[in-house]
Image 1 (cartoon, helix red, strand yellow):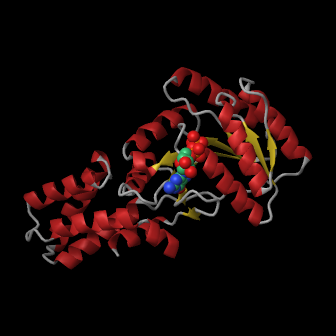
Image 2 (tube, rainbow, N blue to C red):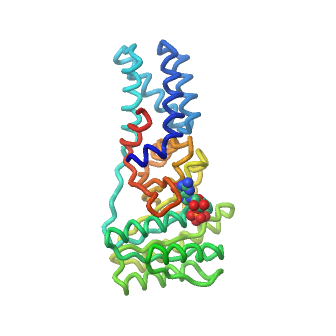
Image 3 (cartoon, rainbow, N blue to C red):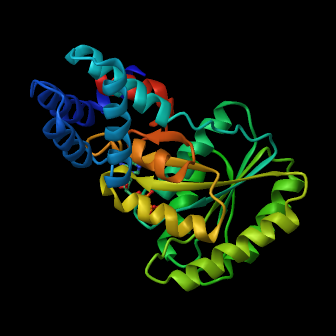
Length: 295
Ligand code: GDP
């Protein structure tokens, strides 16, 4: 978590400084709660989540009659910790991971990071390059696969992504793979196409992937703030998202979005991206994340 602490510095400083300013307003009256709600929204926690937090704190202060800044700060931290406790399920291998997300969020990089991580754990990994829409996507993924040293199944640009996934499942079975990582296209501007394509791939995975655990992972970019939640909602309508990876948490002050994502989606964040290298993916521990914000 040392690395996380260093890379999270912008979010951390931004959050703590703003919250402390509100705490130093003096009394815990309506003005305080309005200001707190505003501050939480400005820290990318979203309106819905910010209202929920503010109301929970209001209730707690009323119950305890607390007038101490330190104590109230502690209550706030407890509320946030409770909010982010959405248990992640660790899928039993062999696993097929369908990786979805809008272009540019870091999908390719994250697949490479996952491949590298699982490989270093001694697992056999196969990648399916099923974003057949962007010519560069398969090439980029292929480069990563070579670098990380894992197998990749790809096809020509414009090919049917479902067919690539079908072939990749066959390859994963034949090679006794532990993990099959499926890349997908992320064209959000055409929601109907996106939905059709993802649902078709998902059906193929369910039909062909007998004996595999299926895990649908959504990649979200922390720097996009509240937009990330909208994306998550659209994709969750297409396929049942079981885990989230939040990228680019390094160098952004918008990391508070992590809390809002968990609260609104009730889906766990499993990993976070804190850089561009293959080792820059770390396990997400929600409690530690909140602890860091208050450090
Ligand atoms: P894709 O279009 O979703 O496949 O996105 P890419 O994987 O190509 O990533 C887009 C850009 O974001 C690239 O320049 C990546 O190096 C960068 N990127 C991905 N993940 C992270 C991260 O966790 N931190 C930072 N700083 N950059 C990242």
